[in-house]
Image (cartoon, helix red, strand yellow):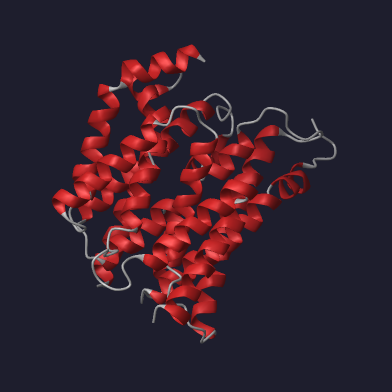
Length: 107
Length: 233
């Protein structure tokens, strides 16, 4: 378990560090390829959608509680963010809402 | 030459908003690691050497579901791709930072970038030192938050069931924020749609890699259209 855990952390760290250093190593003032610039401008939007799906991948709509706690909590998070635009507040409210729902109501 | 260098106090003041965010989110991450049954070092090591919130949260999920190292590396590549662009825009500004340069490059997170990419720095600061202190302080807030969360998980016996939703809430929040602050929603829809399709086709434990391939392909396919939309604005 510990070796696996460490390897996973190391792999993620290596890729992250590489991405941060790459431009300093290879670009050094040269022009970045257009395609890379384009991907960089659109990828963050697409990946955030992917990560939302990733978080909810185990939710079952056919088994109790039919994804209801997740649905309610996502809606709460979206609405609070829509109106207050405070990242911390949205995350805090969404998480507390979900914890309350699965600990007190959908047990 | 500065007789009185105010870089450190100025950097401290500038990082206060990041501090509140990193301490709370870092603590949430630490708690999640504890409730996922990770040893105490794992969460703290992640915050030290990965130092990227989204990726760390996803990695906890990947590890608990026993995903392959390849999928961890590919996910890091996609999730962290934006860091490439932070680095690109800092190449010139970090030219003369000397020995601190590798550390300052390593610590270029979203929040740190948002503080160091500006050129209207507080008065009486040496830009290089100011940027170094901002990078260092943000890293301290993030690791500090994680340590607090890990300790809380060790000490407090409260029921943390559902704490993992912090990750979902984080991504939903960023998704909504990006949606509200951009007019072209096609990339967001491509990400959401491709992932849903791949989830249905490949199942929860195998959909991530196909989804990343599909997203990259669709984004390349729609490049002309998106760049036209960009130009029309």
